[in-house]
Length: 485
Image (cartoon, rainbow, N blue to C red; front, side, top):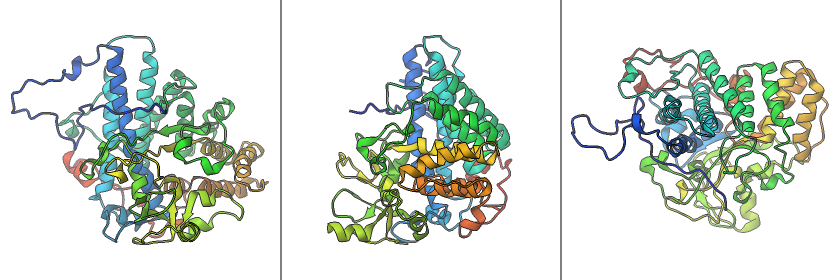
């Protein structure tokens, strides 16, 4: 039985969220005032669980990281099914996009919950407090990294909550300042977290180091990225699993390749009126096969469908292709399964993250799938380390060792490229190893290849998504919009 981190309700307020009570209603609260909350270690632990809870909303970030790229199309039922997703796929999204506003609000809610802990970090002492603070700082860094990837310059608030009304005083900070805080938080986390945790899903030293290396990579700080990434590799705490076909199955979660994994469960129901309340992986239901009847899989809404180009990107003999991308026609012919086609049907589905049979079927079943998201895998760490070594010009032979470990596991021959040819090979390996996992759009942007690979992508505009217009208005129209919007 897996032990998972579940949520508690923590009342926080940030920009667009409502206050917990109306100031014109004179009613005694049944809950303690926030200033009086942190009195025991248990209080800090409960608040920490609340900060973890917003990780589950990043299902949307993952979906859009594929749909905005050349890997997948929006899909769905029709051209107007979740119009915000359709617009991002077509590169015609605007500042009024509802899904981008969700990402903005949900990530800042996660930051506010982490800052709630850190605002009161000195109130009491207890054994292991630094580990609690390290987890909170990792979470703050994780949410800020998502924001800076999507939006660039964002408000940077440290060790205090943003309360309703504060939006008139908060400005957007340059992304370099945000990255600097992310780096500081992750280094603190790496210095104060254990190599292993008893409870599945808790943040470890390896997770902090891996994310720190990734953050350096996104800033082209290749030399700096090498150290934390190789610390993960040399720790011996992680390894590639032998059988890639089991990687994304629900009975193989939190395995030896999992550096950081977001936990989902189907033990609680959910509805469309509060998607952020779901404890299940909503992306799995959205990615699923429309009106599917057959073995192994459950049905879904046919969003995020892989393109022919993504399918063809795999070399002959690559064992990853059929495990990553489901050819539904071939599957139906071999199993007798039936299905219907949705909008932009390509014949392919994201097999890594579509619903499997055997869960509890808790309603709404498409919103409560228990499939964990493998946020950072050891294979990703190997490829990031290879890229850092290669692009820094420091050690192509060692970079080849890391790339070839991933290729060998996939049943492919080793490569011997160097220089720019090796760089291209690493990019290609990242695409086929990580397809369907939400990294492709950001990989293309950070390496300057997006305008040549993504249809409709406009250089100088689409590297960032627009700041939600309502957030600009709520801040008193003091913020400038991202270029091109």
